[in-house]
Length: 164
Image 1 (cartoon, rainbow, N blue to C red):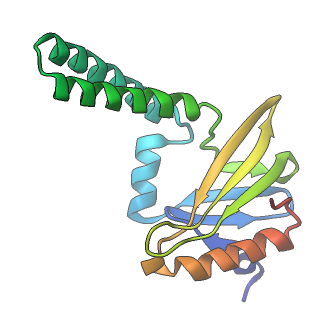
Image 2 (cartoon, rainbow, N blue to C red):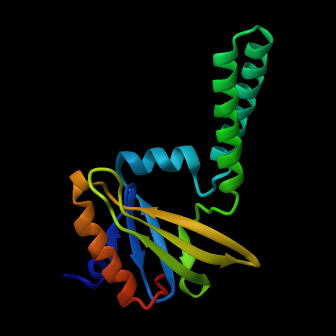
């Protein structure tokens, strides 16, 4: 086993490599290419799309209520509220592909619960004076997600990062 494979683990869209100075997330394969094209290194596009969808659903819901279609109107307004609330909740998230280790405040671990959820980590860090969160999603249960979660926890503990 090489040193790089000992400090790397697979993610949903590529790999995560932990070095002494930084955590590097790289995207590979079709999922990685699609994620890079859609999001890049920022979540602004996602937030913008959620805002557009939320505004469209709100307008359509109001239009449906004005036309006496109460069920559709209420459903569309609920979808709009969900989009806006997720937009507000996502403000502190980051899509950074490189995070300095010394800026990491803590790492939350969320183990997989097959077949319902994937394992993931939430990395809390400081970028300047702002608190940011970066989610690292691991492969699913059909792709060896439980074993990859154990490997990832081992890599993160060996690197001395603060685990919560």
